[in-house]
Length: 199
Image (cartoon, rainbow, N blue to C red):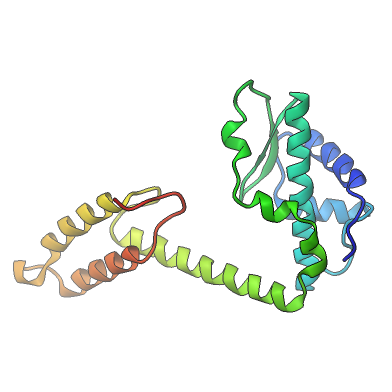
């Protein structure tokens, strides 16, 4: 995909975000940009993984650029997370944490639009589903220990020891429950939520 002219996309995003103060999900933004035939935005079927990747990539690239514009103007903070994209009131000095994003360098490089072919998109999707499966395993293991993220390694270990003692078969506990607790702890030993470090 050739590198598109980004100005019409930025203008349309400003319009959509201003009109939807409650925020919009990424898919909703993509849908509206396509419905409005925003110049430079991919128009092929979203069932095509390459078109979906290009739409996602171009949207994220534009949102990072737009966030910079709002900050330079001092007019708003553009909040982007997995659930929604929305404008928030500008707060002096409140943008330091917002600016840090390890994915930014990837989305800043428009060469990815031209160099990411169907095989690479398939590899990206495979890694995405593997990470999602790993996260689901982690959440299930936390539920067995009656915990939820964010939680640190020490808390997990303390909870495991307490439950293992209570349910150990040698102490009259249920062996099935004990094995589930042990498997959950072993699963959590292999995973760590983003930003969490073991001590």
